[in-house]
Image 1 (cartoon, rainbow, N blue to C red):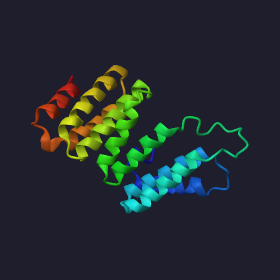
Image 2: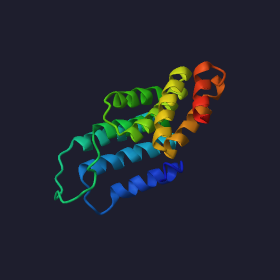
Image 3: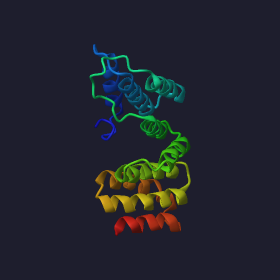
Length: 186
């Protein structure tokens, strides 16, 4: 929720609190916490080296065997694709949108996401492409996300598409960004 509210300080504080608590979390949960810490660092403008160190820690933890008692239900959804999607998000926050677009694209080509998640991450990829200065590809990805968001009634995806349109403002008169605006109006 702190990330959705764009509250960088809380993203970082919550992650650090989860990581340093008196509990033993399974490695996959610790990996996710490390990624959230990386996201918080990126949002606060910390150097990319610090963000990538934390992402490396997350990758190591994600690959570690679970030595906890095995009676937890935490982290059952965390997998390589989840990891890549979260890393991509960190790269957007760190000002490296081209890297983010590549990672989002890698996951999207696997065609293993739910349709709702596909729409959302197509919108996220469109943001990354727009921030990378690729307005036409961003708009095309955005149109694909609009179709899914409309079909599934995803307000989360539509909010993200608002970011795409805002980022594409310098190119609003190009055909592809105009097509995205038209798709959002219908």
